[in-house]
Image: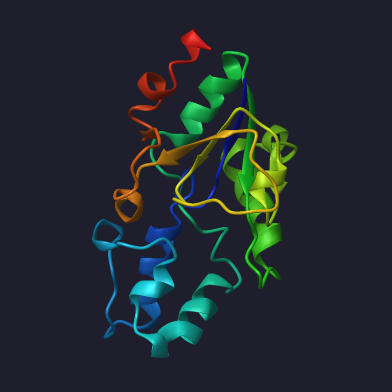
Length: 182
């Protein structure tokens, strides 16, 4: 089975990294914890006048590289791979990619090792990547093609209103995917 796994907010704590940096830079401003989020794309929940500052945090040197792993994610990928599944990280770079692209590669190398660097696919259109399953927090993956994969939601506060898709966390992935049945 070919398993595609998103990076941001699936194996790397993008939201947590943002809140930490935001509070450091702007201690008097509102900060919204992931449990309080209702939309994918955190900038949608912040006041419009903060948009440039939010983008400055996302695109700052070191932001992606400093993200903490999400508990259980790296171990789950290793276990999937050890059981013979073809596992790839499938992530979208930011439009302002100066630091993002390099730091995604550095993050994978630092947390999973150099073998996994070859398993990182960066694409603006995940529908163009073939696979059996895509584990992603984004509730709606749009693109140019009809996906070959089943979209399995990585469960997070802002996608809980979505119905009709399997969802998992790194605590429940084995039960949800039930690879023995594939």
